[in-house]
Length: 102
Image (cartoon, rainbow, N blue to C red; front, side, top):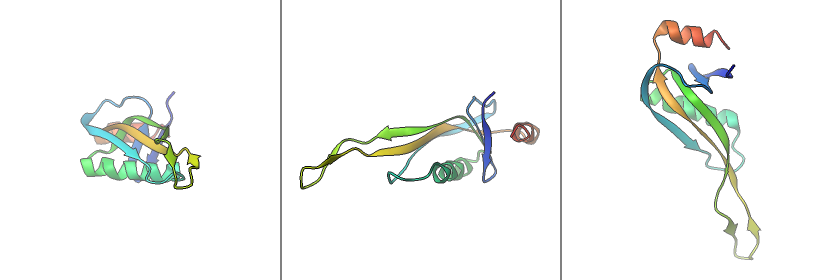
């Protein structure tokens, strides 16, 4: 069973959600140590901006930026969290049923 969560009134599911598709959400952290909770809040805000009340196919992970060298020749890798999913609108009954699965 997929994990279902809710953030700021937006329901997130790792599985597809059968609703009216409104667009894709793809957010990348601006800094290396951005908490996943903050990223999910940003995804919820983007879903609301699109008019959605749910996000299906929710995924998150860390992706490496390009390798960077500073002026002294030291090298470090920078990995940032990214989140993605499909913003959808559900009818009230379907949204409440999905939310009840939390």
